[in-house]
Length: 206
Image (tube, rainbow, N blue to C red):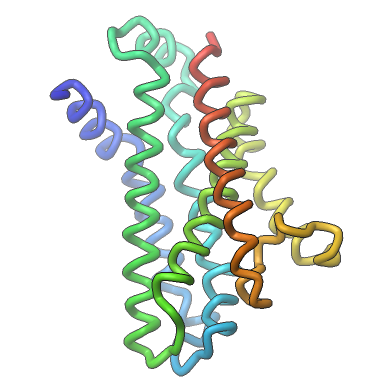
């Protein structure tokens, strides 16, 4: 167990700090672009789905960044801790950061007199984050290209803006803003599958 805490500590120090600070900065500057006071529930959902969800694209694919250097990858793969467990620890850390940032941001919205059901929107937005971030993790692992890991979820995000909802169905990213909260179950489960598949693929890569 102590070994895992060491892994988590090193990951936070060398890998997650910059992505976390960047995500925090994006949320801090959001009042320059978005209204954050006296919002209705659909308006709050739009803020979360159209803006806040993007931080998952920054934070989750970053779990594979250290292994862009093949020497580091070879060194880590030679250690006692299996790579799958190493990636699992990193994913859990990244998810905890996402949950923290989302929770704090939604508390600020509540303080701004926005009216919404906190738990319902929190879980729905978390599902969107897991899906977008999981997509980045999966394609990063599949191609071993960091650019692909960031670009694919962003392209999917853009498609959701331009393509009619009926052509995307339950995988529509902005479903809470149209009252389709139940669609988030599909996104969340698909996101978990993408994360697991990404870890499995990356763990086998030499």
